[in-house]
Image 1: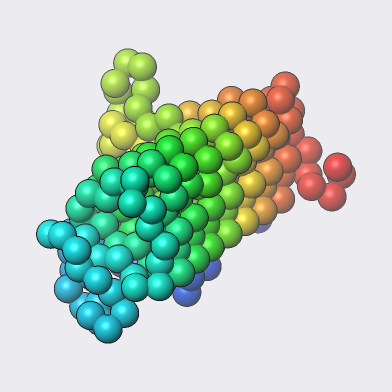
Image 2: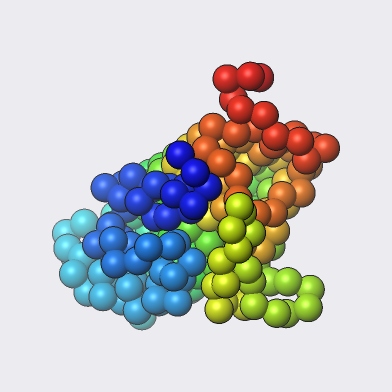
Length: 225
């Protein structure tokens, strides 16, 4: 599979593992979906069953089966899925679609994101303008950097270059992507399915599926490790 194929929504995600499936099917590349997350949440929220979801404040829906610590802040628009956990001092700034069984951990911050089911951002993570796939996991202290220092629009760089027209893009993590502790994902980074980023690594561009990225920036296929 080429890098071009691996940066498309259909090749990164199991769409049955998000309530945003129909919405995401309307796009080719994941960054195209970032602009409409706010309106998407409002549309979905109005359809949620009051038997399964509480509606504690304007534009916020929280599954009755979810666990939300009293110290967490949840701003709208937001949906917290069934059996999700939002732990101590999590800061959900808004426009966050948190999937079923997903963990948003202590002191994590979310803004303009789609987190698929069973995703984990469990400790001191910042995730902004990003989409994290099914069972994607960010180690403690790993973050998405969503804006360039020069504030110019982001170009996704792989074997080809993709002009996104967006000033803010964090990271796109495919299903089962594994990000090591204190790693930094630079603006417009796309990590393929089952790829692994070593701790403290600074990453940008397109990382192929089933690839390991080591601290020195070198990459090997997982079967070679």
